[in-house]
Length: 80
Image 1: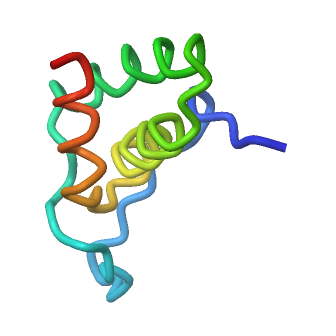
Image 2: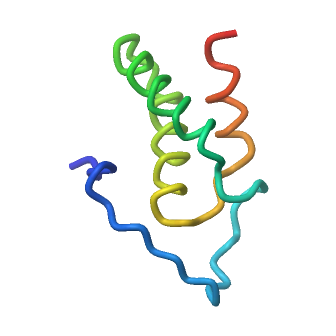
């Protein structure tokens, strides 16, 4: 079953050492808004790689974690 992103609770653990992502920081509002738009388009097109990247960006924003820079780059460049 897929996670429910809209109902997740934001968790901020500033003392966590679990920031072993591949770069980047917490995604900004523009990249998260873009991720929702790209997620909808990727679902329509069946683009599974983009769907997963969008979900990771959205999940990072909801949990306060860092998003992978590759995921953010994919989201922001999707319609180019």
